[in-house]
Image (cartoon, rainbow, N blue to C red):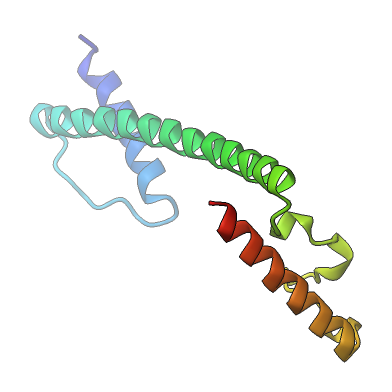
Length: 123
């Protein structure tokens, strides 16, 4: 078991981390409050580690799904956002429709509609 002074130091460091730039509320420093706060800090550390692992797992799954979607799109010839040339996408992530003539816009709409019909009929 850690000495009380070491736990008090750990609790103070944890509270500083949690409250950041805000002032740490005053509390009575005694063995009981130190023990309670130390226990909370340990549970918080474990929870933070678990959340980190979940976030990393979700990032990996998102990458795998993106890869699977690209593979599906290539195999079935379906439209996907990743198949749109990057030159047609502006800084906001939206397609720059003003760069095309009316006829080109209509042609794109018809192609997208035809692709979505052919993709949905293959399911």
